[in-house]
Amino acid sequence: MCGCYRLTAKERYLRDHFGLDGDLSWVPRWNIAPTQRVPVVRQDRNEPNRTFALVRWGLIPAWAKDASIGFKTINAVSETAADKPAFRDAMRQRRCLIPADAFYEWRKLGMKEKQPYSFGMLDDSVFAFAGLWERWQEPASEFIETCTILTTKPNSLVADVHDRMPVILRPEDYDLWLDPGITMLHALQTASSLSNLG
Amino acid sequence: MKKYPVSTRVNRAENDDPECAQEVPIQSVVQTLF
Image (cartoon, rainbow over all chains, first blue to last red; front, side, top):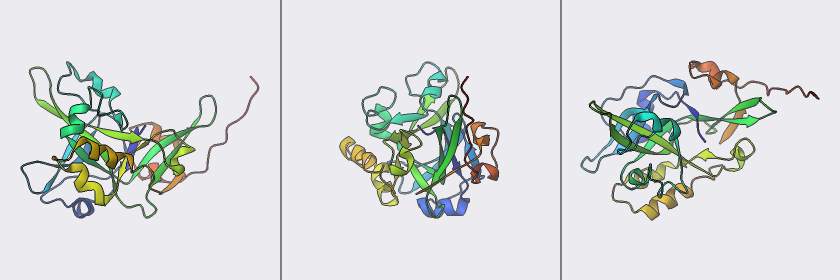
């Protein structure tokens, strides 16, 4: 599970790392939590360049009757997301990058105590979670865009703290993950090969 | 990748400042019989 994360990178660095054009607005955050608006990077089928947007964390499928499902969909299990009604359309058509520079996981210490840990790159550089996004229309109201973070089995660093971790994409896989023409199989292979970043 | 313990301040979403990213000593858990 990934329930909180950090993105302190400045706008200029995000623009360079993710190959973004145009304006983007981001104020550094040290504790991003579910239901908050978070940055996503997307590739529109009809646009040549990637785009940056802020969407709500907690995916609401287009068919949902209300927004409450979003509290249970902050993460999607990568091994099963392609089959789950809440995620399968997004796995096919609406994949995104979710920029971060660290994430938090909790290790149980006793009956109630838990110790949070920060996980990030050795040089504190920005990276991307594999994400999915959706557009949902609130009854008689406006469209809301939402997202979820895919999770996978932990690598050796995370394994002694928690039994799951977010899928982290290598920069060379960004295009593949965002490609609207990619096959499901390839997308899953991309996701499943990324849990061993050491 | 690297990991390090951080403050339990991250347990609360309203805490959103650089202190959330600072390394802290690991908590010690007091073992009790009852």
